[in-house]
Length: 431
Image 1 (cartoon, rainbow, N blue to C red):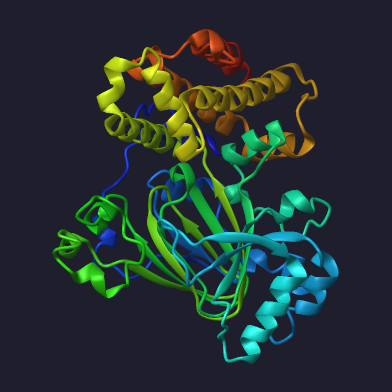
Image 2 (image 1 turned 90 degrees about the horizontal axis):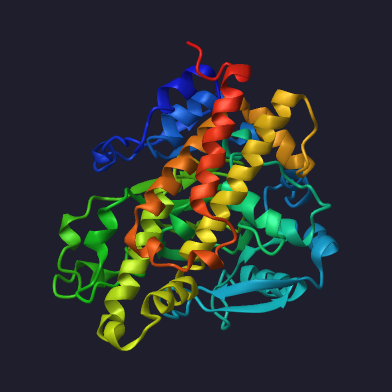
């Protein structure tokens, strides 16, 4: 991040996002064919939360574009089997519906490839249904492979930084699916950003700007499963469907990368036999959206079990437990998440001031150095803002703070002291 970008956003308390009305009638997103500075991407797409597409130039050096793909541009089943053979992988059945998703099973990779070959030979059909290998943590399972590199535009990634620190999970995935496989209508985990690169094949994306999903709920308040299904036009089932804008329909070619902003609901189809790499990620630009999502999730839980409020001494704690089981995180873990992100940036700024080496992983040190001092300072300001919001939140106040891994008040004070002690040395506030 350059100094101008930092000064333009460092005074922001609540990030101002432009209206999404321009996308209500448009069928186009920006296509980035040549080099783009990180600062320009930050200002034009991250902050305003707008989608864009990167050309295949940005993936042309990836090993997987050569190793996993035949000369004809098809999945190279032979090479893939050599690498992954017996590896257990998650496979969804696109022809089955379980709640608002497709049920998954774990099978050996070679079994999925055997199915895929037969599916193609049978004219892209099978009595087993349309199976889709998805949400496979390939990078975590095979860290030595290094078959792709995260573009710098998506490198400020708090979500995976946090899970890498805990060494228990990540949000980096490989998807492999035959022509006709698809993903139902949804928004990404924690309302994170996502980026998705086609290694081979083509996808069709249907994207709706934030807020439009409210018109695509049924009479019971449930989100649509398939926005292309005929029943969507049934005014009894979906009384507000006519109020929704038309989706952005985007065709993604082999090698291209799509940036999907926070809270943009989408539905995705594989138009050909396709392999893609997908990351969910968030940072200082959309952490406020995550915080709002968590508040909404908790409110929904509280409404569901409101009738037991006066019969349980630990009702508020039970709400947190239920929220975590549904969304994957509660307020306490969110506070821990913010602490890890803040600690890394405070260490980075301090090490730069003192000219000392940092004590966190090399890849993180390199990422923070690439993004620069201004970005680290911006990140800390965003963490501080969310901490201030949390400390004013009535539900957060009700938590037993002695159970938290860190005290938010103390962390907030540390951030302020770090910013004060380093800003002169780094000239962060010089015009």
